[in-house]
Image (cartoon, rainbow, N blue to C red; front, top):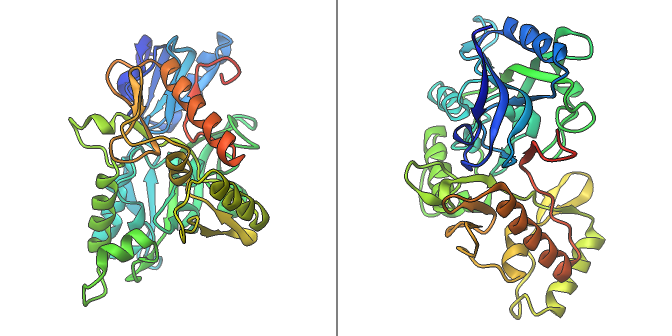
Length: 358
């Protein structure tokens, strides 16, 4: 199998630019390659890791001792005439390219997800969301290879078990499915969603309802201002995006966090703890706010790892950082936030090649 290579550095395939080599790496450009690659790994008793766009992972300095499947299945196609707004995208397709494709057709539902790095196959796994939209709201089906059944399967939206930044693909059925394509059901001619405060501020004073294209550009501009848009040459973009999930808590816990903030003098007089509605009557608290009020500033550095100069939620490789340096910074932030607010921050990136995570 010539498309399987040995001892390939993984750092160039990640947005953090960190990580050692894969023992083997397979470029999966056709669905049939999955079956052959898994047989290769099984015959050598190798662990397997599925790599998409590399935007949400931290690879160990020692690399990965098994087979990495780099999913490169590409292409975007729309359904035939009687099903407008239905589009299927290959898991290896650049996600933002797909968003632009939808916006150009005036299909609503993913415009607020503009500028998110990575590939389309990662969107159902993480249930990617931003600025008031989540992928799960418009995902129709997910095509995947089921490693348990040794068969290609189609999972409907309900079978994916979507919740905040999670699905069966990264929780209860982690490592079972290899996502190969995703079918979306978009709203043809639908109104853009501009409920999120950042977007409302952006469009304040503008007389007309913005188009999907205008919302896309606004989202990209806001993301760029927070170093959440990958721009070549910008050191703040050597990151995995948002490194921590926003905590989702009960109303009772929200009040407790508020009191902790006041007792530690983390809020000015008359200031309120920011909050956003979450399902089941729960409350989402911005992790960036907790990090900042725990004493971390933009640009804070710990060796060659640090925080973005534009946003405290992004941990960056300042140049030559190791995975261990990133983990040490992660731990420092988690500890101080917990000591201040009794809130445990959960990292978003997948840890690859670390003991207990293979």
